[in-house]
Length: 83
Image: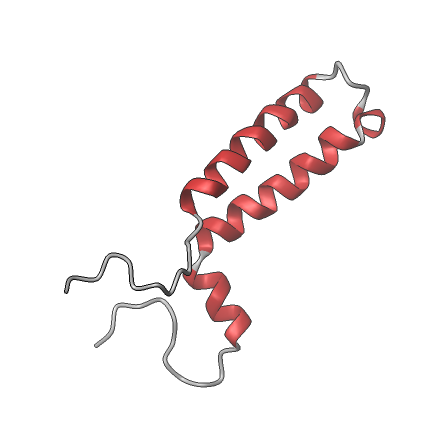
């Protein structure tokens, strides 16, 4: 019995598997996209001194740093393998 949240049957699309497997990166990307929209169009959300716009700028900056931390490097040079 596998404890993986990804079903092993072939009816699940590869895109769905990638989202489930990399949920941290997906969640941070969605948060950054929303807060980036708010911070780059401040007039829509009450001006550049509005609390929501200022908070969105901080979240966007922190989200980019978090994305760099949790994203995976798909390097295939064999680094990290014991020889």
